View 1 (tube, rainbow, N blue to C red):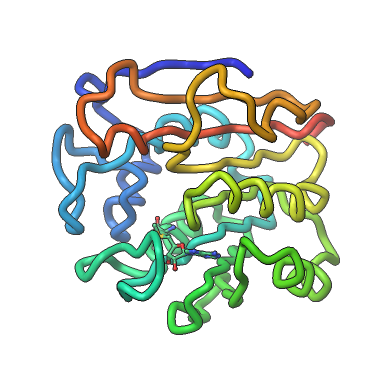
View 2 (view 1 turned 90 degrees about the vertical axis):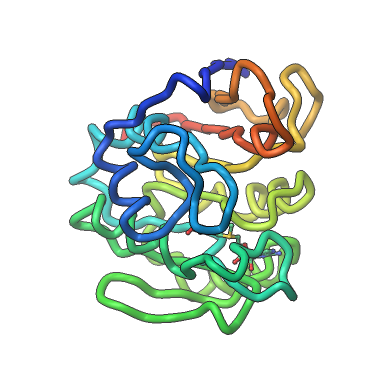
Length: 224
Ligand SMILES: C[S@@+](CC[C@H](N)C(=O)[O-])C[C@H]1O[C@@H](n2cnc3c(N)ncnc32)[C@H](O)[C@@H]1O
């Protein structure tokens, strides 16, 4: 695994993707340095990393999948909190990928919605059968990009990866956000992946929230 460090105090994100996330209400990135998301916690620094990998294939992406639509309900772990905007990142991704069908999955049935180029389904990422049911009905074309912004626990990341990676196109990208559970050098399921894996994280952990500002990128072998 390659590990890359960034300085969260220094990043000033001028990517278009950061502006789109911020506009639609996702905490994945912000163009305003040092501001907090409406939920009250600092923004993540994922937009420049996503841009690094995805800007060049933006127009070619036709199938995009994200686990974690977003809920404001406190009954579900990894809730966005009362001031969150469910569906925020799906709308940001839709604006970013002009030719893509955007599919979102969440364990909270009340988070589901349908809009132009956005479809959502109720799936529990910790249940292989629930994931298999989704792919049974949605595997006619492989996905170009898969993002895991769901439960943010190692077992959940592993189960979803093992049951979805086969549906990613060769050359496609698989991202796991908020990997607070992963320490550089730690033995996890990621050590057993033969495709290139990278970890992006803050150079210095300044608060408990920084700890979650970690993004894993897996680039499936093959040509996009
Ligand atoms: C941080 S929110 C997603 C935010 C959204 N992606 C955004 O950036 O706007 C995480 C979501 O994961 C969902 N979640 C929690 N556990 C899950 C599970 N086992 N399977 C699927 N989704 C889960 C929660 O219901 C919540 O809506």
